Amino acid sequence: MKQRLFGKRFKILLGAGIIIAMCLLAVLAPYVAPYDPLQQDLLRRLKPPFFMAGGTVKNLLGTDNYGRDLLSRLIFGTQTSIMVGTASMALSCILGAIAGLIAGYKGGRIEQLIMRFADAHMAFPDVLFAIIMAAAFGGSTFNLILVLGISGWMIYARLVFGLVRSLKYRSFIEAAVSYGGGDRYVMSRHLLPQIVPILTVVATLQVAQMILQEAALSFLGLGLPPPAPTWGNILAEGRDRMFGAPWIANCAGVAIILIVFGINMFGNGLREYLDPQARQR
Amino acid sequence: MFKFALRRLVYIPVSLLFVSAVLFAVLRLTGNPIDTYLDINRTDEQVAALTKRLHLDQSLPVQFLIYLKDVLSGDFGQSLQFGEPAINVVLERAGASIQLVTAALVIAVIAGVLAGMACAVFKDKLPDFLISTLAVAAQSMPSFWLGILLIQCFAVQLRWLPTSGRGGWENLVLPAFTLAAYLLPNIILITRTSMLETLREQFVVTANAKGLSGSQVLFRHALPNALNPIISFIGLQIGRLMGGAIITETIFAWPGIGRLMIGSIFQRDVPVVIAGVLIVSVIIVVANLAVDILLSINDPRIRLD
Image 1 (cartoon, each protein chain N blue to C red):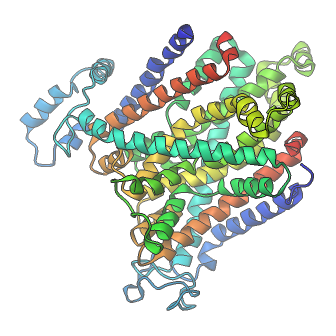
Image 2: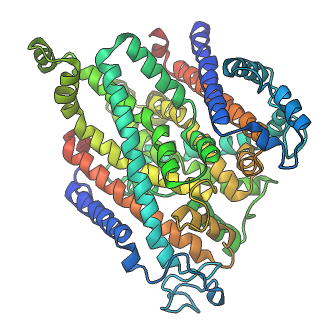
């Protein structure tokens, strides 16, 4: 392609900007949010945002069915989304990378065992798996991280497995083995550093997927239980008020799309930066 | 061909066994099943009878074998909400789910392949730029919000289509498009890349040199050879599509398996949930088999390895 409209530097900067802003909002939520996200005010129910007729600057994005300030709820919602998104990504990345490293490097029976297990898990749709687990163990932040983390490990296992298998017979690995490097040493000091760049890109993009999954589970009522201000919960409330108060669902939707877009931009920019071949496509 | 299909068939029981084992483990981990069936006013006789009926007095491995036998014979127990066999409740809704997924798949494939081809043909020109930018942006769109937006636009504002439920074709349009949005952006981008690679091949140059018309070269020569990455992508995504169907059915009150399962989870109707998960897994595994066969028909070289 001659020249993309968005260069890699622009993508990385824009993505990083959005991500940093969202993280700051999450950390500073108690200071930034104008109201307590759980505080109800039944006299000020279903007020529209300031840019719609009847809205006031008192509640910038309006209020929901219980008179709770939507902006405050959205700001506190970033906490759950970012925490569950990054922690579950980290969990599945660690599980998958270790499984893939061992399967790719050891080969033989261990490879068969790990990779066939991953194949079987692939046939079990992750949303379905997450729904079963969330329904069985209930929605708490810890359970959500566990469920989403376990349901995503195969992606990393397959990726790392493929990379390790192609690296295994390269001479620098043979050299490391021949001067007496043990399995763990070769895997951690010689194989892993080769994989980290690609793994970083996939892991970054995966955070966006995890945030979407968390929102989807909340939306179905399987995330943190209702009064908790998560984006999925707000969206689910918004669906029930779609006719009278469309701003509830739409504000939550914009919040989700903003962070997912930021992460995707950052991840794609990073890929182009680390892998020059991707730029040719 | 037959041998190839047979070899793929072996994977089906293995995958389904895995799903059944996970379900069994989750079931036993979530606490005493007696509590889901009987309320607080139960008598000791009731508990004893139920313990015997559910085989809870046996050891865990024996329980697992009995469970597998029941699953194989399609006996998931009675639904607690509907009072009829859970498998019947689920199978009644399967048609609606399959209809929705098929419609979404058709929309995603036709629109995605055509848009992707347009990108490849007009590479670096305005249509390519517009479509691929839109596709990349659409990857960030959460489908559950897209569904709500579509309802707001086409059902509430324009009043062209109904908001929810199942009925004529007009009920199918919005859910099918929402579900199609799961695959559409990726199909466009994959088709674009695959088409660009194919268009560089010798046989396309030959076809052009023979004096065939542009559309003949594109659809008869280039497209069949560019299709395989798209078919295998769809195969990998069928699980995600079924997962998306659960969410789409919830948004649009579409009476399929997904909505039934979500409702049953809140009603603690365990037999229906298990039957639902297994039927969905069967659909996915069979669809994957179909994709594998389709791939080998389109590209006979695959059968050799």
